[in-house]
Amino acid sequence: MEQGGFRITIFLLLGIAGVTGLSALVGSDDPRPASAVDRATDPAATSDHDEEMGGHDLANHEVGGELEAEASDDPTAHGPTRLFRAPDWNGNGSTRLAEFLDTDHTLILPRPRPEMHEWSWEDDSTQIVFDGCKAIARDPLVPRIKLTVRAPVDHDTLGAVEEHFGFDPADVFDVQNAIGEDVEYTLANHLGSDVVAALAKRGILVDDDSIRPDYAWIVEHTARHLKPLAEAVIEEWKRTMPPSKASDTPRPGNILRSTSTLEALTSFVQRALPYQSIPTIRGERERCGVRTPGPSLKLGSDCDSKALLLAALLRSVDSQIPIVLVSLTVGDRPHMLIGVGVPARSCEAILDHRGRRYVLVEVTSALGVGVMAPDYNDAVLERYTVVP
Image (cartoon, rainbow, N blue to C red; front, side, top):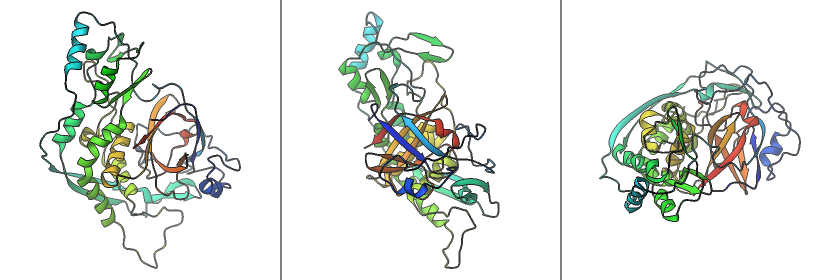
């Protein structure tokens, strides 16, 4: 986990209002452009990240601009992660903590029992028509691609990861106050190293004044169980590719499909699984607003949980592919993107950092790889997590 003390520039290359400096932006190792790039400034041209964008009218849809994002020192700014208070242990509290520390927190998985499951979805990303790097319409003459995948998934094993992940706050913290169904905690002191180590075994990181999910832990413990599904999605994606002919020419402005693993798995995560917010329910296990891939496949999920699922699917078939999870605040909304270290095509949103280029993917829209919404122009980068 790397954070704080740096400035980073994200280029949202899709839909740049003026594309004069585009080649310089794509080809330069310097993350700052050689020439100024106009921003899309229409305040009405924003997207709701809680809604699928696939059916939106793209006429005059300004997407992108240069995003200057400065890392925040606030480590709790991402997602519904709440604040905690280390208690003064006495009475029942000390008993709960003692029992928590006496527990073996090693993850134990059940015997494998994969079962066949099926997902169907339509992909219409090739209908999007661009004028340069500006999405302007959808072309109804380009057919939607219908995909169906059947693959074995071990929901018992993935469910065991979900059950192990997180903790009961009453075991570790004092509740400061409760508002409605939400519970707020305050961390006034560092927790003991034994508590921190126990939480780490449950996929929870503690540092200074923040408590958050260990995204790398989740990917590590789920990726290998998702390999059959990922391979089936990739095979179906390639199977539905139209036959290539020398005489074929794309309609003006349309993006051609590619056979890339990233495009196949992105289509699945964006379109086959619904967006679903994850409510905070008092008395349930604290998972910092995150769903692991198992329940995401069953129920759908929100931005960070979908990003985690895509990361795990990618890692299941490529253990070396560079992945970064990017936490932003867009307006007053926390949000997460995934960045993947693959070659960027013209107009795709990218993140340059420490000599590596990542293509950014918005997992809760249905616009494909590298397509960003216009409200990211004013986004603030809160933290980023490189998945090892």
